[in-house]
Image (cartoon, rainbow, N blue to C red; front, side, top):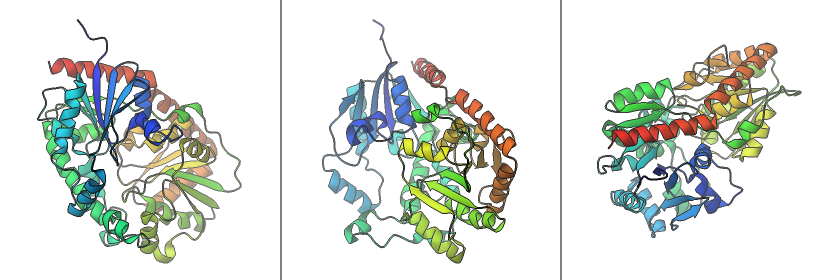
Length: 423
């Protein structure tokens, strides 16, 4: 008897739509949550993911969720921090136990930074790996924006036991997370037979890191609110620039801070809003120390974390979107700005050139160059009609690239091909 639907097991870094059960229905999901919603009626989906505390497997909207955490999770967290290990060898057994229970037709690993790739050489089931970032390149570019000696600093205002166990400097993150992740990634990718990517950058890199693999292209579904809204030129009394980024060391936050005074010196009255970085962020503290008197005294507004609706609203209020990263694959934040139709500036980093065409859909600039960034902002602000046209073309391209039905259809086709090739 033929199976009615493919049994698919995801190994992911986030709970996808399991977050609705774990944290409440109001919590903003990720792009993976969007894919979860779009595909769950097409396959029998199970999502296995790391979670900070032990919770039994559960079901939500027809999808099975397996949080990966031991019952003695508090002790395990402390042990990992004390011995500086990402995960213990016995966690491979947890993966295999989940596989044994689920009995999937295909396994889909999202991302290469966690040890999920250890299952590749111990299972006969077909496995496909989606590239998100590439740790080997992140390791290489990690200190591109701020010198290594500043990365040793920590916050000093935390409760002492918490500070000792959990307050990692960027140097420690580099040493105990990025470096071993890159080493593990290199090992597992060489064993990988099937890769899913989205950009020329990840395609080229996986041709050397995973030389035995077949490469498939599959784009990502964005968060729902970004499909529903459309940017229009706001009537602001001052220029509002928006950036969404994490507080990772290589995201180019310091370039923003160097660019603001250059714009102000040239007569622009700006407010640069940064979502994802707060005033008490270690990244902001280090950037202040690094820049000293050059750190912007005005014109910088740090928004911290925002939910999906508030983020969209802040972006719609802005005149320009800027992505300053030193390395990216396919920046979801840039894609979100493009699908809104915003005039965009982005660094020519990683896979960015596969997302946006220079001088047609936005402007691409060198990473780490605040003068070029300031000049590109000046160019768009001084040519309003061209900037709006860039935004329109960017939106047209993004609507095609992030079309939900096409993405799901192509992913299901990839699953079928991989399953057949593994028979």
